[in-house]
Amino acid sequence: MKDILEPFMFPHNLMLFGLLLACIVYRKKGLWLLLAFYYLAGNSFVANQVRHWYAGHTSSYNMAANSSVVVLGCGGSQTALPACAKSRLQQLAQLMPDGGSVIMTTQYCKPYVDYLLSVANNVAVDCFYGGDNTYKEFNSLAARQLKPDYIVTSDFHAWRVKQLAQHHGFSSQVMATSSQTFRRVNCGVNCLFTVNLTNFDFYSKLTAEFASYAVFVVTRSWTDWYQPAEVAG
Image 1 (cartoon, rainbow, N blue to C red):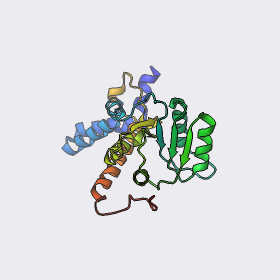
Image 2: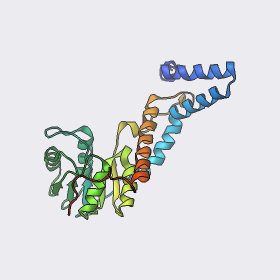
Image 3: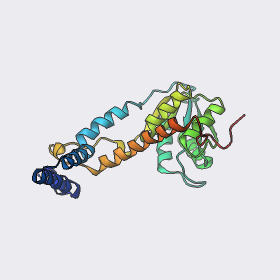
Image 4: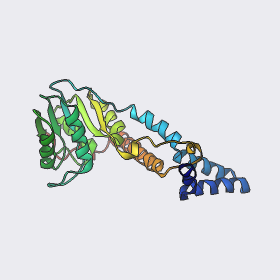
């Protein structure tokens, strides 16, 4: 009973019921539209359907021997490996057979290379700085005429990475590591009557990905912000 009733007392759900009450009392179309937006953006059942659709842009693969893999950069420092990078390298080590080659496009190569060599066996590793965003990393790969079999990224970047791979003529498969935001939210008996703050975070990240790629599409013909500072000859 606690699990059923407790979510109704959370502030974001009290706001939902407050909006519903305001709609009933004042009967304004604007309030009904606001209620619909707030409910649909926060409802876990709806958000889980979107998560399921988005997951279609990523998959787990049985890597063939001698596969070439690119691990996109994920920040960090000369001495520290961020959690997102560690997650990518852990998943890669689990799936990659012996004899493969790995290229990493990060500014901070040493912690990436050291960690991968500590968890993977018999792999050839190379690393270079591809640029400070995904667009520059892809242009760096294209400039070096590298066409990997797989590209490893985080799940919330998967759609954009897949679009960029197609844009550059890569036949690469996109492998994505899981993050808390993009995991399905448990949907119990009260799911249809409540909202969850996790879903707002999910949509904000999803919107950021679509907006980022839209800016690239609109500006790529007349700007060069997505070009790496140094292009290989």
